[in-house]
Length: 87
Image 1 (cartoon, rainbow, N blue to C red):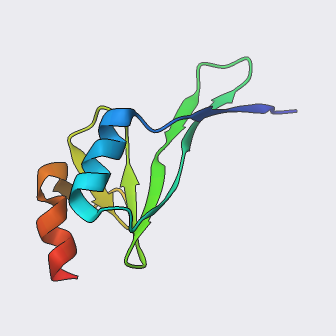
Image 2: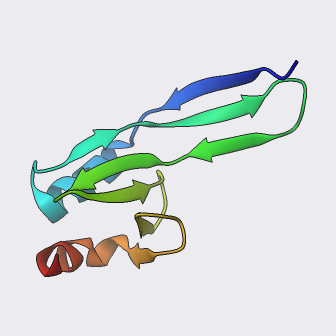
């Protein structure tokens, strides 16, 4: 039987600061997690999920990009404020 261990990863204070800079307090965030398949070397980092203006953004701690809706659409975190103005 396969057992998967899930450990929550808290959003870094640096990432929270960048979010507040880009959109104020108008966001809803869920912490990501680390999922480990027991007795193997397989692990998956689930990103933090942030909803702003009904749009899902995926974010990782210490990462310079924000992903829009999925991991194939990315924008630099420095452009997040401009992106939010357009939607």
